Image (cartoon, rainbow, N blue to C red; front, top):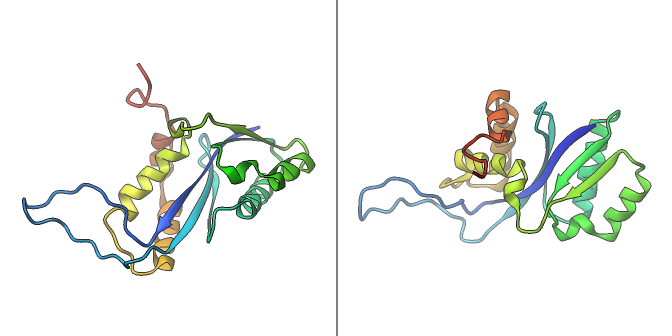
Length: 174
């Protein structure tokens, strides 16, 4: 059995805002397209092995989620999967329920309580990705940003990944 964490994050052509250092009175300027163009990054990771699946889709709907789940089952053909996910509306659609009912017992979704992203380990990966790739950067095209995000995730070393996924004392509730 594999314990997997799944979530989606929006990739926008408008840069993520973040704090940075600048001379007082001289705010940092980041180019922007004027209107947002977006894609959705779907990710599922095994926090122990570092294996996972990242896919970029134009929308976040049940159809994309089902494709992600199907590809996930193909990625781990011999394993039973325990998938921790949030309660996004498209995670609990009729189509998803039908897929799970007919998919046998290989995939079980464990829904997180509402408003609890701190319980989903992949959220830390999304934060790390934003800090190192999308914050305060205008990539020019959404395709270029998606290529950079994909390359960043592929190049992420296992030690950094495991550090992000761990429940270190600074992340634990006292």
